[in-house]
Length: 122
Image (cartoon, rainbow, N blue to C red; front, side, top):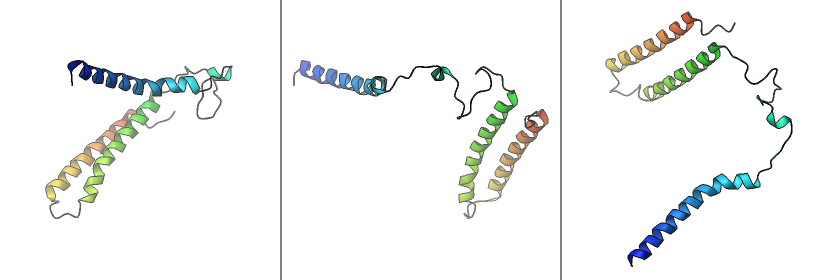
């Protein structure tokens, strides 16, 4: 195979890759409906009509509570593998101490957030 034929194959594969990447981006723009009206530009919030404009300020407590929730959900994921190997004979006192330290740090984080007033809604 000559060098030009190899370049042609590589060029065709690049063009195919670009087309395969562009098609899912462009096709919805062409076939989707484009509604226009006043309702199109209103803020949609879970099926409930908005009370004021969309740039209403929320309390920082909502965001802190959400971040704490996500952090503890991820930390709980670390405890599932421990529950699976808890009856394993290789599971020793060192492992129990490490789990205790881990849960102690989590408990201190909850106490810290509680003392800062993150869990108060008003």
